[in-house]
Length: 305
Image (cartoon, rainbow, N blue to C red; front, side, top):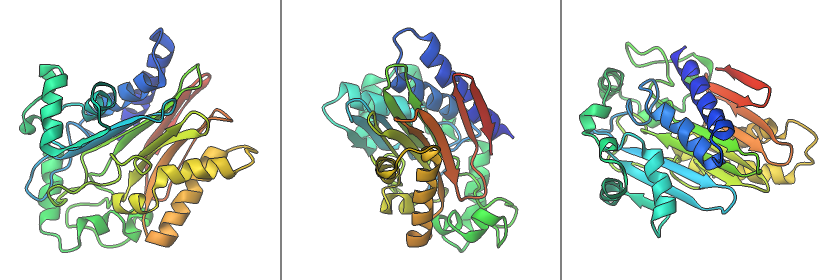
């Protein structure tokens, strides 16, 4: 499947950034991996982003530095090919951490290369238009559709002509650890089809869409944004890692624990990718129907869905 190939390629690019770039860091790796997925129209980030209720693009992104605990985020940005790079510029070249809407657009135009700022139409794909038109006449709220039981089991009522309840909701993310033990995490999304204008999900929210701490680990999330925010999913993953005895496989255990909590408390579904700083191990978990994933490291190259 194209999405699996896409995340596999992105993970390999991130790893090459770590190993072949000289003084490159975990931040460079997660930015490179997420940029690759933003440039791939298969995903709901950058080109291929979902269209809101007005048929417009509104993208969000977050990058987190586990060494300094600093972060940069943008929300409701419309014309940037790579929102994750704008988010990093917010972190490194502004006195702020989070810029939204028109302010984010203005900032991007000031600090990004001219060729990275495009018209909204250049980011719209036929797939995004198809999903917009499919959901436009559907009575069930789209946010509920992505959170329904059929999302996890493949059963239940679907919009006509649309066989996958997960649909156009491939938020992208990456987590990396470099040779110095620095951890970074990044998440980017185009949101959900027909979202209210100005709606912001978990992706750009520190502790919800992503989190990183060199002494604990890093995480990036995808899924039902309102539920992920309610449990501050990635922060909770790191808290769970801190509580464990690190007997093995803690990254996956922590991710599953948080997803179980989110499902039982909020009826929310999603997925998490995690790195455990102590064990230097990666893990992932999801309770949706599927989640493309890839892990690349020393003597490690795995992927699946």
